[in-house]
Picture 1 (cartoon, rainbow, N blue to C red):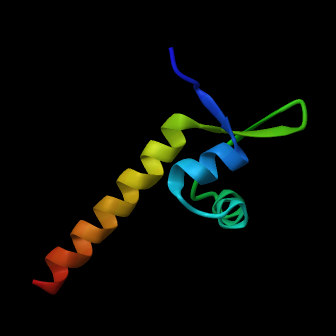
Picture 2: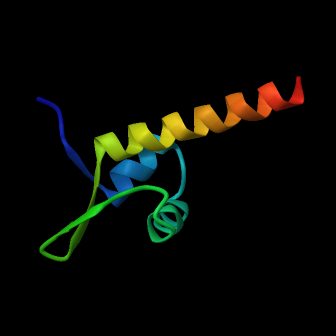
Length: 66
């Protein structure tokens, strides 16, 4: 079984964004995360959900432009 939770640096690397940008997304509630004994962890599923929402937004924008 692969990892279920990633550290913020691991999650940022997976999304190919900076740590600070990921912290912005976490603070805005765009990407979900959990705290375990003071450590912030990002579920892999939260990253998949975020990417899917980006793809949906892009598809909607492209459809509206057509």
